[in-house]
Length: 214
Image 1 (cartoon, rainbow, N blue to C red):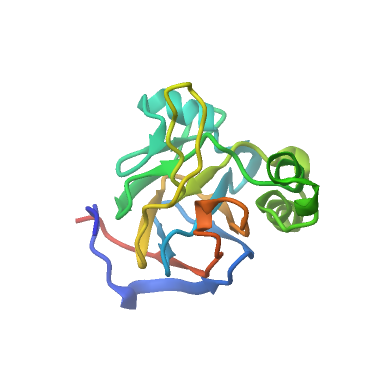
Image 2 (image 1 turned 30 degrees about the vertical axis):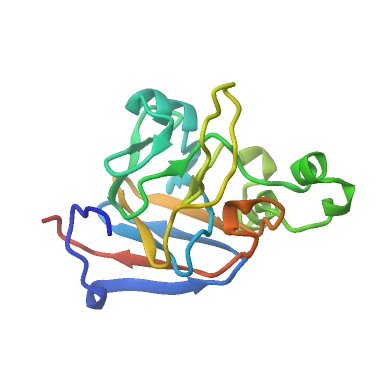
């Protein structure tokens, strides 16, 4: 297991929910709270977007985050930065150490281009996001570059991105500390045409803690 910046006691959880395979999830996280995403069976990608809770125009920025930390990947200690340059969340626990924020979310259109016209009607993360974001009065134009937790995307010598077998084991997790009140949107990735989910989408668990650092 990875390093933690705080002690976890499941009895202190204020929210604990299983998100079914292929499904979306959303919820609010208050400043100081910890959100844990658990990859229950291993090799399951979780696409994520974050918005400032009281001003949705401020949202996660992959570009600002990568520039701030000088790394192509998200891992323990990474600071997730908004499009206004503010700190939204910090990765304070991580058993995996390898999370992508460059490859984007799968969509019906990208499935068609990559895997053939017979995949056009397969469910995809962008559709999950579009359904979930509508609950908050937003639409497709509010969908920006996302994080793919547990997704293994090495950069080839040519500079191209590859999507290969995930490295997260069953029970793998990532912990996010809210540095402001945030709206979290997840798509438990339904992709079956590449190995990001081991070709078999599985459930995840979302837990929120009121935890003291230690």
